[in-house]
Image (cartoon, rainbow, N blue to C red; front, side, top):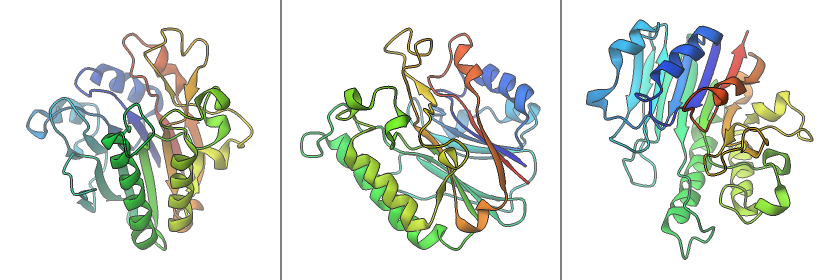
Length: 261
């Protein structure tokens, strides 16, 4: 089985890119973030024609939105409200018997890394705390994979310039500690660093702000795949699909692919 996660930054704008990715890598399950489409306008037919008739989604106009697409039927689907805000940041599905797949879009946190000055950053920290509490109860001891844009690059080698970015939202010590707490709470393995040594740079996002960010490799690792203890033995590989960042009008994120079996 192959599962991919991708912040598409508007599903309807980039459905052709999704089709191109599917043709290249043929994942069985796809987790999407920032779909930016209300459920009533979700492109069900187009996705079914791509080979994904089974769709669990939570979306809204213009912002956020998550979805899980699958070739085979789900055994069960669910979602959770985080921080008492129904802002469409989580869906889950049971696939391939008893494997739980969770798709998350963590708040980006705004520009100022101070929860006293920035409500968006406070929201992000609260969200990560709730994820850790949830993981301690729900993920530990279950066959569970967690995918998504967590909007944190926790390690020095997860950003192109650690010293320069240490006080930037997404790479502050406090946020990195939140990710460490999440992993510890659920006894989760960071699959990116399971397959790529922590000493090696690994990026999944190259921002639009600097037009040459991809060419110069000014990247961040914001997109993650995590495995519970009971799911880890089934995981056989991981790929970051950088090619999509070279396409016309690309998402600033690229897919992360996990193979099982």
